[in-house]
Structure formats: structure tokens, C-alpha cells
Image (tube, rainbow, N blue to C red):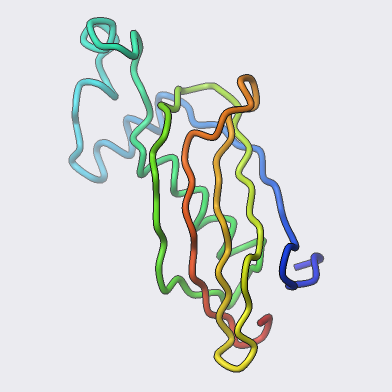
Length: 137
């Protein structure tokens, strides 16, 4: 990690999901809710188009926390999630990570996790990750 793991350090990651990735996630998890897969069905809902599975969107947290910030050696202890707004395929999103607390004795940090729609600037998902990393905290 190029960023010093101190309280208030932050990291951003831009990402998007395709409809093919949504289909793959549905197949992997067995969550074949037509709200995610059927445009005609989704058109009858308040969303008007298919939405991404909330848990698929949240996979960006484990990707970044385990590989980039704080990075390799990090192990999840806990993750809270709030799904505030829908996510849509082929939209750009920014995942924002900010270290809130560090317990250097236990090598544990609490990191806020947010997904922001880059067009509307609204938070779509948020939570707190509790991570342990023997080398970085």
C-alpha cells in the first residue's frame, strides 16, 4: 500500500459492472430475481430497469481491501452494509475507503466503505469494514 495506514487515510477506486457480470453473479449465487435479470419485469418496478445485486456491488470492498488498501495480508473480521440506492449496469461508481480507527496492539482497523454514483454524487452503499493485518496496522 502506497498510502500510510493512519487514521483518516483514504483511497478511491473507480469501477463498473456489466450485465454479463450480473448474470454470472446470479448463476453463482442462485439469486435469479427478475429485478436483476429481466428488463421487461424491471420496467414494471419503481426502478424502471434492472438493478445490480446489492451484494455484487459490495464485492468491490473485498477486492480493494484485500489487494490495494490496506492490501495483501488483510483479513475481514466484519462488514456492515446499508443499501441506500440502486446500482445499475454500465454506470461508473467510486468506492471510497477511509481508515476510522486503528488498534496497533491488535493490528485491527475500522475502515469506512462507501460506493458513490459518479454521475449523481450520491452514496448508494455504505458500511464499516473491520480488518486485521499483522504487517500494516
